[in-house]
Length: 423
Length: 193
Image (cartoon, rainbow over all chains, first blue to last red; front, side):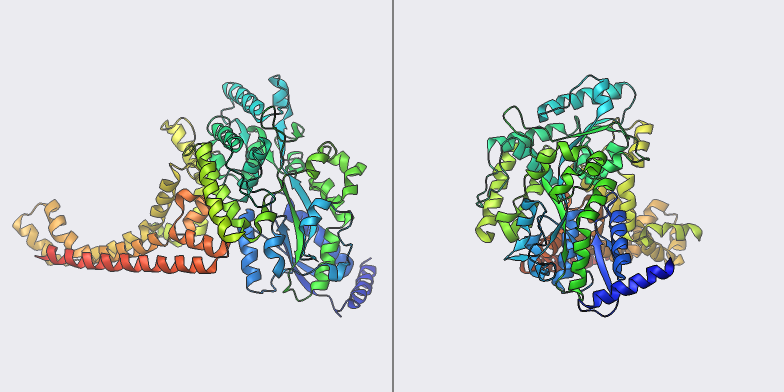
């Protein structure tokens, strides 16, 4: 057995030599470490190693995407070859494009065929394909089926409903002795995650997307203020004050420990909530996020991660092959079934095995394809400042130091100032 | 001896580690600080120490104070061990009250060491970064000057603006130091009369 493996490895290695390198090379890939991400990445990488005979070092990155981007920017602006393959956010290709390798050179022009059009459109910058979609993300609402049933409530369709139901169940559960029960948890720390959460509130009330596609600042409107005011009313009522320092994993900790009725999070939490050591196994449902009132609509923030190859990599062609493998159908299917990471390949949403493992991939298909993108395209290089202004203003409203109307007016002023200089 | 070594522990642990430790202890859902306060009955509901705008600055200050007390204590201890015995013998012969001895003899004698300790702490406090970054991240309610410079430099990739902010930070610290030394010297002269 070992011998055959070895010979096949040699055979593959010699095959690889046709693409330019004579021996097995060492690559480095950076993967996120949120939830089961790191393990999944290591498994995928190991399969590729066995197939090709190359070896890959997996490094983990900070959980907060804001910090992750800072790390990448530092590595890339030093022209460092330390990391060959990087896991990058959907909003980053524009920021990092100059440092990334054009994957078309190795993978061909139709490398991204079959992937979601909306995501791929984001990736070719100046006609270069700088990243391949790995998984997509859209905010979804997790709820405790057992608690809703016990207290006789329907699944909420508006944020106002959610507020009422969460308060009702939370107070009833607290009276029944579970003093740690919370109504709703989300990502409230001042970082990129709050930008997505707040954008979902604002967009679901029909308040726009902070900056519209033409680059106009649209945040200063009544509906946006109303959305932020409603969110502010949650703090200390249905959400703990500590939510202002929660990222995805802190929120998951509370929900998965059985101490929250509702949670806004990404789809990855599904597989973890259904795992053996979860306190809420079998008691969780997933629906689209509520709408902002009767005339509002549900808005899920578009997330998701791509794989890109650094231009400073010593073996960009082999690294591109790793990217092609990891973003390929087989690997995406494995990730979807094992850990509920959304595939970016359309066909997988009709795959029976995938739908069996993660039923809501079928029911929420429209949510995933119509998710609301953050304003990274119109603001270009200034996106980080825009996002920062947004996620720094939101906590002021949430903690009650400003009301919604005041906050959106201030934010508009700040964004207009940024706009004059940057886009 | 062991006690003296134990006092050094907060100072010896890397700040990142101790700050993360405090972040867990101060957590609103499972933190031990809230648990203890609730058991004792001081508070009814857990306080979000690192999240609430009202408490986050105090939480940061508390952790920083906890961390740097050993440093100041050691400097003062060194000064106290070098005090000349004769002053105290003279005071005893004259029958001076110990409290008066402390203010009139001990304190003036250890003032130079205290000044050094305070100036180190002043510099540290002005350029504080790691405690805040771990405990409250980007929150504007606890942003220090270093965190501001870092944000411009690293996050926004605005090298010019960030460098200007860092330089200004350096100037502010330098000015504060000069002012402090100048005032301190005056104080000693006045006190010496």
